[in-house]
Image (tube, rainbow, N blue to C red):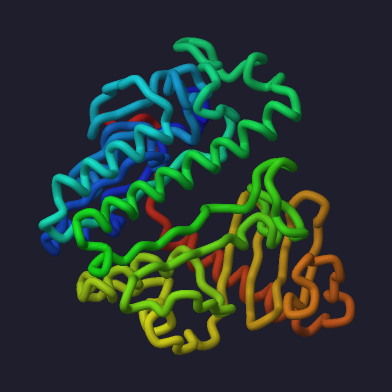
Length: 356
């Protein structure tokens, strides 16, 4: 929440981090982001300060789709690093700026990042009305929506996003550049409410159960990726940057080690990634994957270790930690070692707002 009273409010993306946009801009690409940023509320954290050349969108966790007010009651619609509101439904605005960007840069290499808002609350379809005004935090008008109204709006929100993505792809076709464009679509988490559908998986957004972080991912590149192919290889969002750079033929900064791996050979040739151990943290919940085995530590309703064999139990119903004590201990030790390593190298966050 973009509330200045919160102790983490001054936190954000620090300068020592190298972004995908910085790397692509440095390689001569035109770069843009239209939609959600949420990597810091101050101008020093703005996407145009971290590699992107163009930004229209919002910097908080969510906004009213019509009034563009965040849930702390502040106007949150930007043009680069300046507040610059414009009328329109958020999803439609993101699409509008995306297709215009493609029109303007169709003859150049470009990197276009579109973090759409749907289906985040507030639940508003394209024919609904604003529920937030400046100076008034998220309130009763928003939280008292009926279940039927939320369900209807949820559906409409996803449909409008789908239409927008269709417009973007159609623009690539119109300019004859689709076969030279790699398109990657994925969600950032599982369904947020009971109106979404996690396909029987446990948990949802805000948890490290499969329903919280197992999401759909679609890669499209006509003539390069065979249509209709599927894979059950384990991939993670930290693979996006090395994959995009590998596809574009861009080398990483000297001495930089990526946590993720390139998926290029998997996508283009069907080659397996190979075994690796993956780790996650969300609040006081930790998780690890090792082959088909998944360990979850902490979290609501799970104060101790829980071990699952996802090849047989994707819904995470059968805790095998008591039957597999050695595996549970080995994985628990690995999780704690990973957390110690990550925390030791984490960039320091300020305790006071940065000077603008």
